[in-house]
Length: 73
Image 1 (cartoon, one colour):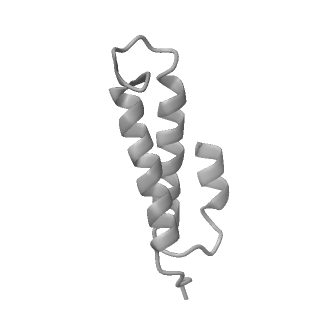
Image 2 (cartoon, rainbow, N blue to C red):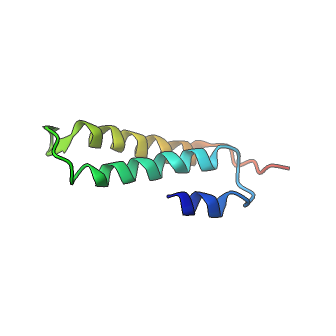
């Protein structure tokens, strides 16, 4: 995750792009890690942390899509 964000840091991206991309990547990584942890399942075979991770992934994607496409000048 660090490598991806570090590689994109100098590209001309719209404001907030790296922050929203971080939300998506952090949520995705946490979701995957939770399969190895032993936590109680709350529904659909997912733990609470996985449900929160799915929310963060969805929020990050939504903000990436809905952000203004203004490039920094």
